[in-house]
Image (tube, rainbow, N blue to C red):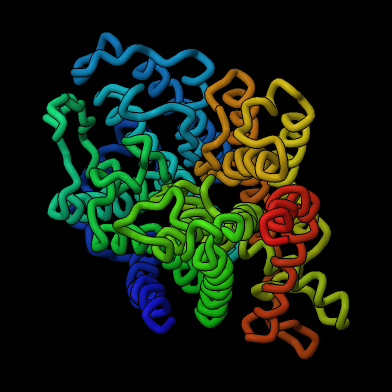
Length: 557
């Protein structure tokens, strides 16, 4: 047991040690202070702003910020659609890949624009190197930059500093954060054996005398932004279980750290913007505690094995797991990838035990256990605001945050942000499960089938992208219905976050009084944890009961 705890600690400890360093760097970049890459990046950034005729020093109101964000995302989507449609006639197509079917192409573009990377296709069988670089890799950077920009401007607005300029925030997210970090990490992955080539498939001679075609391509740089940008979509269908994407125990360790690095650092960055690092570290402790609770549930479930097979097979559940990593690292990675909304996998999630599926679904439902790029920390602050409001009413204290009162408009917007997710999960999930033709596409028709369908929409709406892959998802229904969840789960909460930050930041800041409720104490952080768990459990408990809980009762009875 001590060795198992050590494995988990060796991943979390470097993340915690890096958090203040990376958090301080992010704060300096986005608060217009001197930072490490100024001399290299500033001249090019200024030329870019002059070329696109943007005054990057001008702060935008919420509506303009949102319109700019939508325009940039729409332009990247159209450009990517064009490249994807022309892949059969473009260079860097050594395997002669044809264009994707129209509904699959729509889903793919929307999925990567929304930082979800939900894949209803097999990367090495469907896309050329040009599409992998110019569409998939490109959108991994731009979508992650969008989320990071929104997260920063949200906390900037709460701090009363104005929302800032989207074009500047988006550009700095790329030039100062995502590109340099991804370049450095890609070099490490190259050294560890991850390939980066424009060649086509390699032909190998097998032991029985036949030949085998092995897909390869520009994997290292895509793998780096896949993890650091919380994208998750793999160059290869096997994702991070494939030795080309994750060749060793060392790469597995580093890639797990990469998924956690920016989300954890953003909590420290938020604390610096708000002038309250104490609260930031308490929220980091909360997210870590929730993560460890889900890791414990998943690991214990996988370690116990499948009781239905105990007559023939003793020991942990190893079905669907890469033997290089084993059951613990597979369990740990699965919780990290759903808790950070990355979606990369190093094991088959559909082969996990029912209680493991429960843990992963719960992480997708909450979206605040580190959460998505930039947005996870913002959603956690939303829970803090609601906790302050509810607790203040209960104990007769003034509901305020950062010296600004929390009133009806803020509560309405905060509630809207939290309600959007279940709407885009439960409604399409109910429609899908009510249609016999769609249910036939599930590998199982019982409780596990319910989990498969709900997981698909939860992953789409939470912008995660992983899936219980027993589902036949490359159909017109799944491609278009999940596209609705992808768009709604991404852009409606962003609009509400910007409106909330703009309105809240304009409120007068009052000095604390005896009636003020402090939110930066361990006691209040515990209250926030209870609110997070209760809201998540009550909202989604019916589908959890019909899915993983019912399946667990069948397995363990």
